Amino acid sequence: MDTLLVSGGPSPCLAVRVNIIQAGKSLSELNLGPTGTLKVQKGTLVHFKKGQEYLVQASCISGSGFVQQSGLKFMADGRTIIVQFADNGFQIKRGGVAY
Image (cartoon, rainbow, N blue to C red):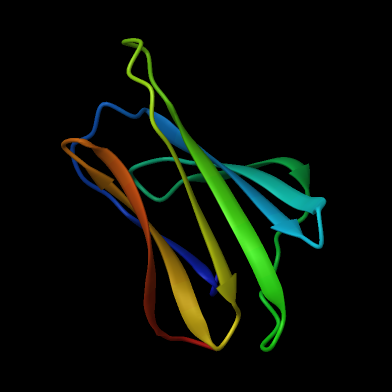
């Protein structure tokens, strides 16, 4: 996916469930793995359209009871969204221009 990238690494999260929302409607639910695996749970892969607003909600899927949730609301401008796995869970951040 050119608009959503995964940066792997050791993490208590086995995967991160990502819900992509636009105008209050869920467009896609994805499970992202730390090795870059992507499994669509609901909807289709979303290509962020420049100038449109999105909300990305994410939660850690853990086998150890670890809990973390995060979100990012943004106006699509050609930059990617990165889900970065880390020792303390995961982060969602904006990346460089990709589309």
